[in-house]
Amino acid sequence: MNEVRKLLESRFPGLHARIEQTLVEAEARYNRLTKQAPSEFLLEHTQRTAAIAHKLAAREGVNSFLPVLVALYHDAGKFHEGEYHKDDVPEEEHAAMLAGTMLAEYGVERADIEAVLEALRALYDDRLACVGPSRIVQDADRLDKLGALGVGAFFTKATLRGRGLVDALVHTLSRELSYALAAPRSMFTETGKMLAREQSAKTIDRKSTRLNSSH
Image 1 (cartoon, helix red, strand yellow):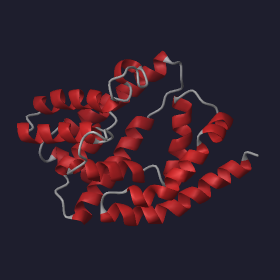
Image 2 (spheres, rainbow, N blue to C red; image 1 turned 45 degrees about the vertical axis):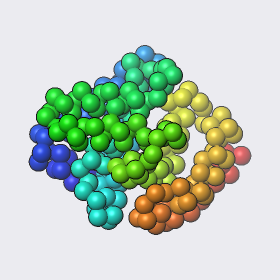
Image 3 (spheres, rainbow, N blue to C red; image 1 turned 135 degrees about the vertical axis):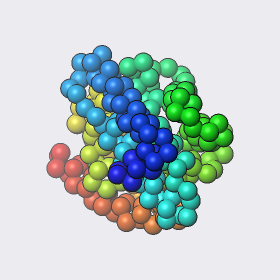
Image 4 (cartoon, one colour; image 1 turned 30 degrees about the vertical axis):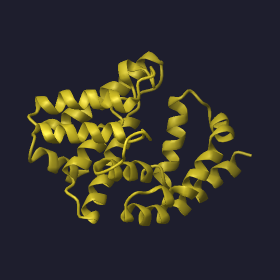
């Protein structure tokens, strides 16, 4: 994560810390309203996704600035107004609105802001072309769901959605295993495909172990 922080601090001092603070506060508000224990799942996932995006961009020969920014904001709309997917507005749209305002405050060039907003809105909207930073961030986001950390994130998400362990295992784990199996084929970048192949087998093994141990 140090490389991501240094990248932003060198150009826009304080921006990285501001984004992280916003994510922490959003999840804390959600936890208070839903009477859940304190957590920083959103921040931790975002930090890992941004670090992966930085690595993917470097290996793909792409300037990492825009992919890193998109990664840092990609889940910023998840707890809009303290609720989890509160309305029919896609969380990426909430993230784009937040990013547009904040990046302008820090003096980011308008062309770069527009590129970030376009990439955020295109992340998981099949109607929009997934190009540029979106491709790298989608791969990074998906890669973070694989391997040991991905297994842990699966159960954390189940908690955020109000599901118990058994319910999550019964209703969701088989889908997650299918996702892990197909992950290498869903990647946009060659580096993403390579890393997904490495992590997919580990994910399937660990989640299958969890499923068997619950019987």
